[in-house]
Amino acid sequence: MSLGIKKTHTMNHLQEYVKDQIWILEYPVRYAGINLFGRMTVVRLENGELLVHDPCDINDEVKQEIDALGKVQYIVAPGSYHHLFVTDFQQKYPHAETFLCPGLERKRPDIPFDWILGNRPDPRWGDVFDQVVIQGTRYIWEVAFFHKPSKTLILVDLLENIGDDYSHLTSLYLRFWWKVVYKMWNNPKAAPEYQMGWGKKDIVKGGLKKILGWEAERIILAHGELIEGNVDSVLRSAWHKVLNA
Image 1 (cartoon, rainbow, N blue to C red):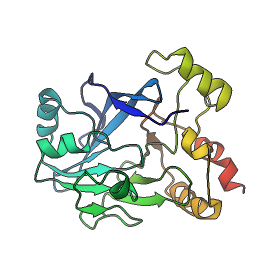
Image 2 (tube, rainbow, N blue to C red):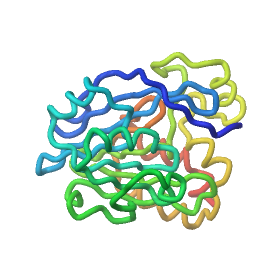
Image 3 (cartoon, one colour):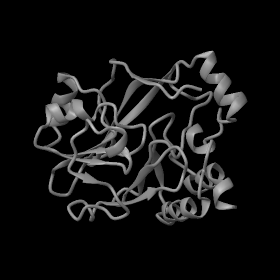
Image 4 (cartoon, one colour):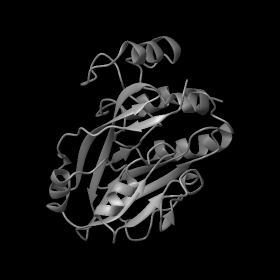
């Protein structure tokens, strides 16, 4: 299975997810020959500044919608495969600070950045977020974010939720891989890159247990339908091979 990723350029509008605090926008991306959708999250911090998590390709219309919410101060590339549109955002917001998931500074040396994300939140957003780096895996890393005021977990690839209720048309190719190969159809699980190599499970387990300790009530994820109930059981089921190792 090829790991090629390509940009596409059709997008929707920002949607308010948590009143006056969190907005989301789905954007299309072509990955390994499959048309998928990612999800950008925009969070308003206590001082009114905005943090943009997993940025999309940004056009003037989307920029106007974002600017109506506040000043973009932080651009976050949260995972090994969630970096495509960082430079697009940097061009629109040249004064914003860029934070990268560990490893992206080597994978994408063309992306200028200010900071590498770690296991502690930047003090400027520590009142709003907690975070942890999921590391020790073989092929993919990411930084999980927890929005404390709304108890919202924000993930990119640690959980995908695609099945019969998916709001977008899916190809036979995607259905084959998700149903037959990875058993992910109607069964939320971590992305295939995790399943192909959980790596040092004791290290990974530590990060996953921290996430579970946050006791999130909802999950914003990059690929698939949002999770808005039974969060603990969904996560434990998706990660059981590591948690029970």
